[in-house]
Image 1: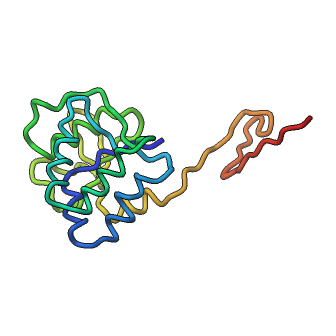
Image 2: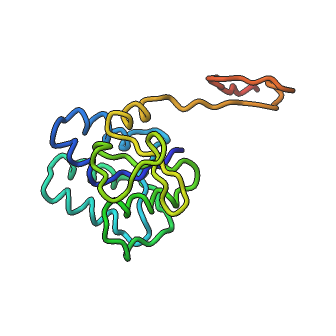
Amino acid sequence: MTCFAVSSCIENSTLDAKTYMSDLLFTFTQSNPHKVALDSSDKVIDIYANIAANNELFSSWLSLMSFSPSNFELIDVSLDDIDCIEEVFLKLASQINGTKKVMVNSHQGWENFHYINGNTISYDGVDIEILDKDEAILELATPVTQIISHSIVASGNSQMRDVSLTTTKTT
């Protein structure tokens, strides 16, 4: 599973083209391992609800995300004391176990935080990868690769990549 902090500025891309709505946000409503991070203080969901009140497509996405099974992932972090929107999503991403990524409309939109290396921003000592809308679409479209090592099938130093395993029931 990959969990992303989806910045509220992503909404700007949904106003520009419905492609970003379908290829980016609606990807999270499908059956796949991708999740959208939410904080335990409900700040992010409140931000999303405010956007949805004035954006019909965003409202549709938020509604679809509410169905079970949910593609939201609750991250145990309180964001109540943060007023800067950029910092809300950076702090949220910094608390995600595993990959720490924020999806944004554009790399050019950052006003309060600066890139340290490529598409990385360091927040509170944690490196966070920033993906603009086009990079995010590519990331979501890339199939998840599982590598099997040290099993009965792959032993020693051998590996198997992009393998589809099925089981059959014998009687």
